Image (cartoon, rainbow, N blue to C red):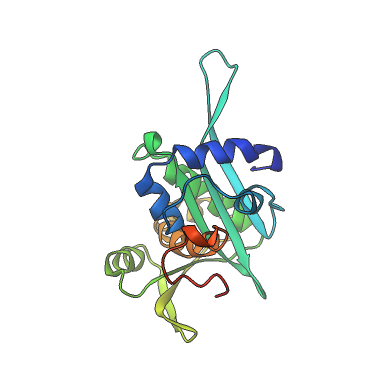
Length: 204
């Protein structure tokens, strides 16, 4: 699990992301993460906000490097529904790490009583919407308060159904990719105003 003492490693990991990866993850150009952002990312209670990390140990076993993080946050008033996201450092992308993190996060969510993973994606993101629908996610509603987004839900099997969880592996990967848009919108509100995209309203 991610803990407060991982703060500096989290800072280093964000700084190691390429500009493109940072923009896709946080929906904003940014340099060093703010202290407020690091608080949000590392001070998690592992129930309402759960974060797990993947690390790589050096051959001499003396150092450990964080290479990926997966997290979910339960919805206020609906703790059985959670939004999640995955971040993998650039040099480890395309090697299956994101899928492994998605599987572990799905299991962690199911064990904590989460029954639905949710992604809120931009209505104009037709590619992601097609991917989510192909993975079995169901469009539940257009948001009345934000007509530019669409919500997709993926039901999780109970934690004692390992076979069913295994069959959901690809679906969990895709729903978490989509949910990353929502998590990015939440996290970017922690950026200093000068680093937010033009017109972004931090009070939304």
